[in-house]
Figure 1 (cartoon, rainbow over the protein chains, first blue to last red):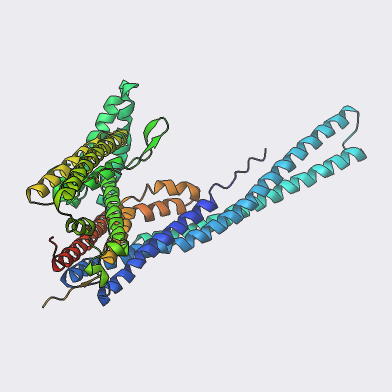
Figure 2 (cartoon, rainbow over the protein chains, first blue to last red):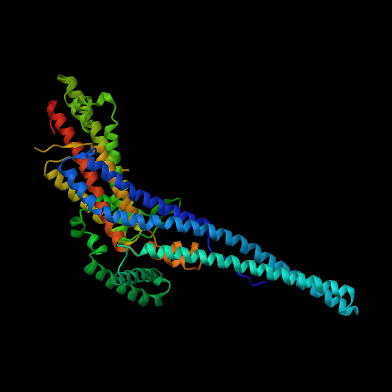
Length: 406
Length: 95
């Protein structure tokens, strides 16, 4: 064959990346609108709202810089994707044309050899035709090579221009310093190598490699934590550290199960997440759940509303319980009602307990699929939740709930 | 005198929006994964540097947004509970 190389790259994936960067930049930019609403006092007018807005405003320059960094990359990437697509089309055709021409030349050469075998000379009319056709094929091949080279050159130029723009964008105020990059690089690489420890059961010779990598990872993480205040140790001491970071037990449990899925054959882990990422996911799930609870509160039907709801205020969550409290009848009918109600409550509690136990075991299986760190995180989350409930009861708060059941 | 005017559900929504952006930043994947699509030219490493070369700010910003988001959801819930409790106390109930 011609030996002409194809042009690597995937224009559709480059466009997808550009779209993703645009969308992230837009979302970061949208936070500016949030700031404006807070500034107008439309959402939250009061000392706490001001403090909240102040914290958000402190982040505004960084958010702008990140939006410029990521959003600015979208346009040059789209231009590159177009250039790549055009060049790949030309290169693919050129490779095919060159291959065909080479094949045709070889076929003509075989015919020439046959003619020589039958006694034809180089000057014979038939041989001259064959040689002429061969020259045509050589020219076709040269033309294909020239088109290939020109397309590759055009793409290289587009690639160079794109890289220049991206490099300029990367030199901003949010760029990492060189020492930080080195440390973060060591940590990432060592964590990656450390995962071979899981193979040590079948390949014991990998054990020292994993041990060395783990040690390097711990060293780099400790440096990141000590010098830059960053890392899992700060967030994931899974005890006092977690409590200090203000991470709720429910968020930890949700994070521990993230990335694992139930399948027909059991539970599998589908994503490799770091401890910090698990905490972030768990906190987000928790925030969404509480937001949904608030939405649900505001969607309570009118007949369950209170005076506050009637004059435009929110409907209290425990309104129904409070309302029925005042409707208890007197006499034996009341006693019968109360007895029946006690049985219903007891049955409901037993059912709720069973659901909680089932949900705990289910989540524990998911956390187990995610590895020992996720297990520890889940156990810590569950412990924190129990402790929080105990404290709430001791302080005269609410009784046990069924939040665990999903 | 302190004046408070708040849309509790909107504050909670805002908290979730901030937490979502924060989580997105914390969960950004390995930038090397994007490199293959660009081929062997200079744009690949440049993209990798652009996406991965701000890790420190990314993690700090992601954490701050996530914390602020959680605080927003907390505040929304608290305002709502307070309003409900006060409403009940005026109506003759208890907290």
